[in-house]
Length: 211
Image 1 (spheres, rainbow, N blue to C red):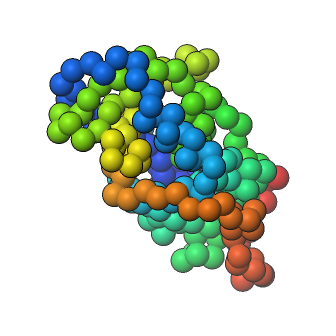
Image 2 (cartoon, rainbow, N blue to C red):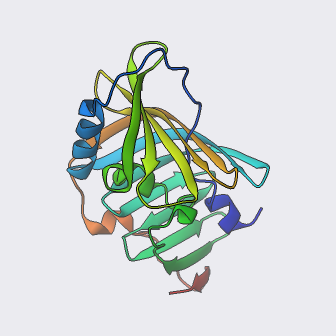
Image 3 (cartoon, rainbow, N blue to C red):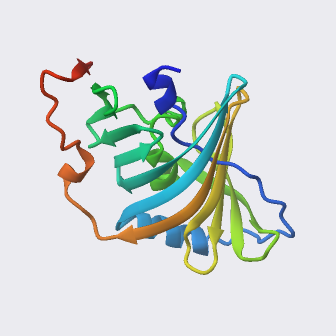
């Protein structure tokens, strides 16, 4: 698998919940989650499963997200985005690819996990709310506002602290990406430099700059 293909599996959402009853259009938890994310730096540890064109990729990662800036560490690859540029760093092979930050299109979400969580309120509308089978969370069934190639996004948000427990997103072409969140916390915002690699990419590195 190429470096770029590996990176494109670093995102996602699934494990659909079996709902027990409708929760109307109650947005309280979703609004609390979105407000917290917009005012903070979000740290999320997760495992993921992404099925793209019939190929299943699995792994784990740690995501830090702040607005359109993010960084992901997982499966031996580190990714950074300062909202203008993306660095894809494989330290073991001393290879880095630098490219412009992706446009906000669903096709880019596989390589830009921050968009799924940090701009939910701007990019989706609530279709239905349901209570999870264990009663501890609310499942928000969301539809995209403008993108035809997305079928739905589901977010399971815990009632106790308005953090995401799991999520799922389905594309019209059959792509299904899944996330199980083991921990999520909101911390004070950090500087732009936190979303750029601190490594000096000297002559010993293979640097591919596509900007």
